[in-house]
Amino acid sequence: MTNSIAAMPQLKLTNQVCHALYSATNALIRAYRPLLEPLDLTYPQYLVMLALWEEDGVPIRHLVDHTHLDSGTLTPILKRLEQKGLLIRGRADTDERRKAIRLTENGWILRHQAADVPAKLICETEMTADQALELKALAETLYLQLSLPKA
Image (cartoon, rainbow, N blue to C red; front, side, top):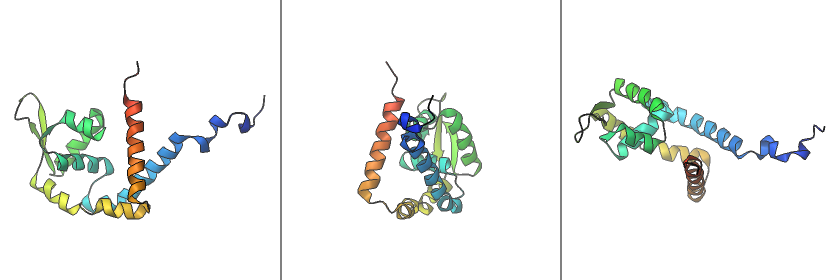
């Protein structure tokens, strides 16, 4: 039995797409930290706020779909954002049995304070706009392919 990785290059760490994506994701979240700290937001909270700034007054299910955070992860994030006074979890206008998430005035004010976060992050990556868009498209394709139910 040989211990040489040359016999099994598919098990070489440097050949793993998952490791490159995992490492890049961790580095990206670390890069966001100092940009989000003055806003008193964590990265997952920022994702939720981005979704709500895009479309307010939505059911939790919409946020699950839009942020790709499962409801077990999303619920404590929403509770924390509500405690910070950034949103309200109330009844939906169309169906009282469902909850709708609405931004407060402070939640909308925070949007203006966060407006320069994306540009600051892009500056840190030193990627061109085309490179960033290509990376985003590839990541979205991978997500969709791995999320589709298998036949």
